[in-house]
Image 1 (cartoon, one colour):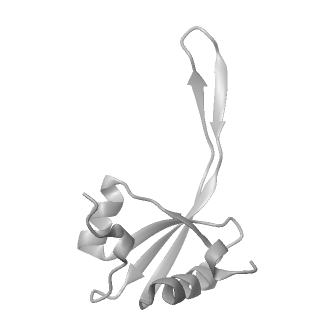
Image 2 (tube, rainbow, N blue to C red):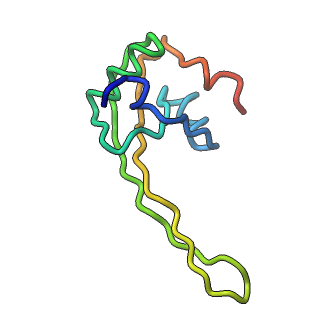
Length: 100
């Protein structure tokens, strides 16, 4: 990693992640495949100016599915890595505010 801005790829905003933000103070991001806990923690603390309590990393495996009705074409979604970031209750990340 050459920059902290390459560690975080995008926020993952779903119904479950919105529940985690409001009740558990956990935020979900897709991160680079070679990122570890310390890199993710440093990146979040420097970019958003918040205090990180804990970082959990999950490798999401690739999923296969079929495309079309009569054609038997299999499609593979690529695998990725996501991070569950727990903040202290006083801190908020503004990109998740107002999302319902």
